[in-house]
Length: 263
Ligand SMILES: Nc1ncnc2c1ncn2[C@@H]1O[C@H](COP(=O)(O)OP(=O)(O)OP(=O)(O)O)[C@@H](O)[C@H]1O
Image (cartoon, rainbow, N blue to C red; front, top):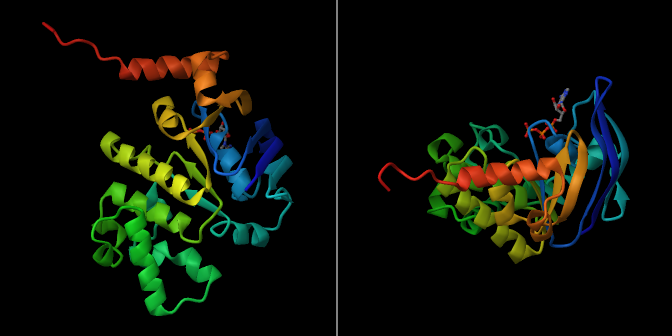
């Protein structure tokens, strides 16, 4: 797997919101994209996935396994999504249909790309549920999204994203809607899955504590541009740009506990 984003620009309504973003992701690598709200993280991900709003204008290049994605037709991009590039969004509630059983949704991309009998599809759903750590896989695949917890819904959405064995998974704030303990388990799941399958991960977050748990390398976006990048250790041991320093300060403030009176 190789992803080379070069001088990516996105304009919407005449306003440039992503300005010359360049980065690379190689085989098995986990890259975190971090930045303040509005810095262009989601639009960068959506550009790779070919899911930008219709009115967006895109410039630059996105090479996925040597193939140029900028300018590909919607049909070509739809074929790549799900099969070669998996997606996990922040809110599983919106990614999952409320009226379809989890097992069927988890195996959707498999059923699009392969011909499966009813029994094969059911077995695949149970196996996927097991892989993403859902409890009681045999019965949970028959549940509807509202019948399970938020963390379990996100695990089901991750199962759906990995079902067809994509080489690259793009996750946009996938743990932001979850509480901290559930968040930890879901982050561990992302690590396990990429270790097991060797797939690469682009992980978008505004939270440095989350990024540190998941990424090998990081890219800091500010106002639509990359302002700093490198291994997580290198960037965080010597943050250069004011945006990176602000993220480090925010993470420190969150982890700092004011002593209770009398302590
Ligand atoms: N559909 C749209 N139409 C017009 N402007 C948009 C649209 N989507 C995003 N933008 C603008 O583009 C900029 C970058 O947005 P983007 O969603 O990529 O930021 P982000 O870093 O992902 O922020 P957040 O963490 O809040 O999701 C923002 O200024 C946003 O207002």
